[in-house]
Structures are given as structure tokens and as C-alpha cells.
Length: 379
Image (cartoon, rainbow, N blue to C red; front, side, top):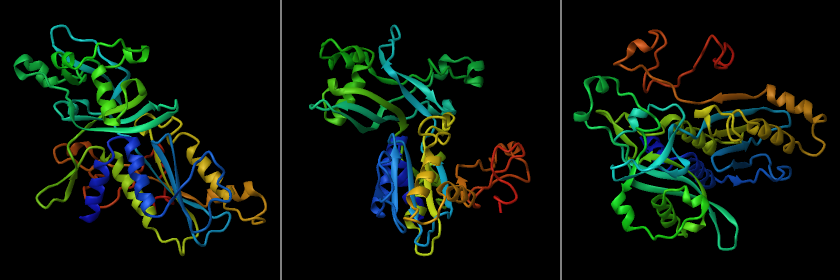
């Protein structure tokens, strides 16, 4: 139960990839990991028995711990997870045209990833992410923001205004039906200062900018850009008759990120011969092909750079050959979530291949080779 409580705290502290990386960094800092800058050379910085990490864009992270018995050419034990989850992202131009006669101010949002979008209706939604701020000295800073109260809501159409056919289908128009209400037009007019906005600011919802400025303690004019998402403000909770279930948003895949982070933080390196690596990638939900995704060179660069930096002077002639040997001695676990059998939809699973909740890890296999599982790797 203690581990479950720590996992719940991790989930609550990580409403978006930026906060997930910050939460992970704090755990690693407390465990004695040294933060590195990937723009600087690793040679001379990393050593046997050392623990390190660096992030990219603040939304992906690579942590590694070098075994005390490591020698050049030894392998890498890698766990890969992802920090992102399907959500409603605020568009680069957040202002949404008013619906005539509705008297409401809404935000312009778009769907990120493959979500069950009908589940976003009637939830208490906050706003979180990264804001780019200009400092008084003219420098650019990236600041994290979290408005942890229900400032937005996507309301369902009242049953009295739906036909029986509409109630049965409940089809969601992503562009129109998922726009959250931020405030009423009357309340907005009472807080307006009447100043003419700058060009970028003219396309942003003023109420949103004022909230961000208040949270960050800056002027509205200092806000240069943002990457923001909506999130459910309800906290993680334990459920079931014996509290055996963990209910939370973003379990896919932050539960794996939490597990991997605790594993590498607690691992004893005294008898370890390899390099332990945890890679937390962004953008898995949209294909992983970004500069911070699993399809980027990020993982390959980390292994190559570490393999080179850990070669002691004069140790092991032929760096490329040692690197190739290290790769062949390595093992990668892509740790994501699996769908347990749903008692109300049991026909969706094969009878002999139906994972059960709380029955241990699931090893995924696919005849079309969508997974890397085979007789050797699955044993």
C-alpha cells in the first residue's frame, strides 16, 4: 500500500509531461543523482558507481546508473516509458470566437492523442503546462504553471434537448463539442482593462493570459508563448471493497514512469556489471517521431555517448567495436500499460490471452511483430 500511495502522489503531481519530468527529477535528486546538461560532453563527468540524468525540452528524461563492476563493452539495461497521455491541448491561438447569444467565453482546444473524448464531458478541468516568459532583463525563461482548480468545463447537452437517436449515438464533434467554458461574458467584461493587445496577444483569450500572469507573478505582456493542456483536477484514489484498485487519470503511462524511476533510484550498484538506463519519452500518443519521442535519436545518442565516455584511458581498443558489442549485450523493456479483461466486455479478449488485474506483469506478443517479444526475449 505504501508503494501505491507514492504512485498516487506521483500521478497527482504530474498533470502533463513537463510536470512529470519535474516530479521525476525531484525523486532522482533525492536519491543522489547528478543532473547533467546533454549539451556538454559526458567524458570526465561519468564514472563507475555514479548516478546521473538529463532532460530534453523538459518533457523527456534519461536517467542512468553505472554499475561498480562495469567494464568497457558491457551492456545497457534499459526501461522505456512515456510521459504523455491523451488530453485537450489549448491551441496556439487560444481565443475562440463567441457563439452568438450564448454569453460564454470558451477556449480553443484540440485533441491530443487517441482519447475517449466523451469521458472529458462534465469534469472539473484545470490548466497546466509550460509558459515562456520574458524577464525584465530581456532573457527568455520557461516556467511551469498549474492552475489546480476547476476553471474549465466541457458541459454535456441537457437530455431534454437531445433526441432519442442522439442519446443513443452520442457522437462527439471534436471542434465544436469539446470547447470548454472558461467564464461568462459578463464576468469577463468586469475584468477587462481596455488596453489594445499586441499582435500575438490579440489572438489569445485575455482571461487565460491574466490567470497565467497571476499564477506566475508576471505582467501579461511578459508572456511570450505557452504549451498548455487541460487536466482533471480530481486526485488519485484507492477504490474497491478492499481498496485494491488505484483510480486516477494518466495511469497510462505515468504508472510505468513511477515504477521505472523508483527502480533505478533504489538499485544497488555494488555488484552491477552493466549500465542501468530509464528513458521517459514524450509524444508516444501521437507517434513518437518528435525530437523528444522514442523514435528520435535520443536513446541511441545516450547509449553511444555513455559507451564512449565510460571507456577509461587506454581501455579497450576500437571504440566502435566495443560500442557494437555493448549494444548486442543490451536489453530494452518497453514498459507501457495493458488492458485487463473487462467483465462487461469479455468478448473483446481471447479466452486464453486475457490479462487479469493485480495478477502480475503482462508480456505482449504479436505475430505481425508489432512487439519485440520472441522465445528469447520473453523468457
